[in-house]
Image (cartoon, rainbow, N blue to C red; front, side):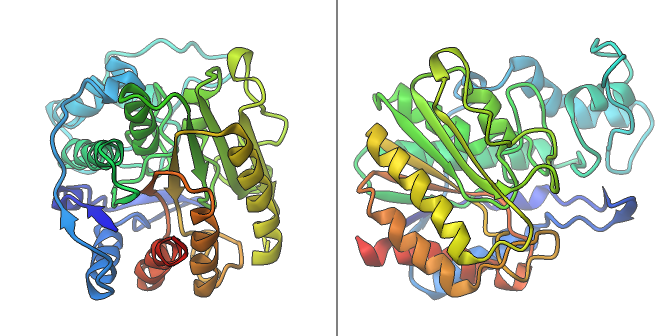
Length: 343
């Protein structure tokens, strides 16, 4: 399987995030991507190639240009205000407040970001832009005839909405890729999100559309981040009614119960007959993940990768979460090897 990878991911290297009321070192770190790449190479998964540069236009097919411009310029504005440390918001336009973008960069951070765990640094834009190009290159190779491609994106993307970033995510790599597949001629694209956390950004982007089905297996938002989207009754609106499929599960879910949800999502995707599949590949469902609470073992990732191959669809795997760094490469590559072995 072809892997697309950019070393520019390393430029996103935040020092701290707010987690459970504490300032802690960032769980989303450059070493995550390095460990996956090492495993790809040690297992001889296939060639590793750099991304092409498709520019901003395909990014702005799913993201508001104003958000893209903010991300591209936020660090300079932060420095111009006299700051040199990582930029994190501390106030947000929630209920009873007015969602009008301030002039001050401190307020603009809260306007565009929905949490305090996603620092903007000197290299954030370079890394996020490169991750989007990795996903776009993967989509282009799929459109050109590849059966499956692994877009080793970092930073991840599935929490980034059309006009919001957060959850370690700046640009929604999977959504950008899905839109690129549509623009290249795929009439229907399915996005399957297997990350522990709900892909709130992907849901928002495609919620009212009839051409992209979104299915997400994730921790119950009553218990887990992002808390405010991901319930089973969120089924899409207008033309997208019935094409948004959420499968929330309680903390402690084991592989058997998780696979029951995957089988239901599998059936729905198969019946819809898409032309391509994008998998938001989070491996934070692993039993040893430090910030997640499902119970999948490393061998389970191979098993469900094999099951996904049964859809017989051109498939783009887009890397999302996974914070058990020592195991992340094994778990991610197990999915890909399971897929290939069943093909």
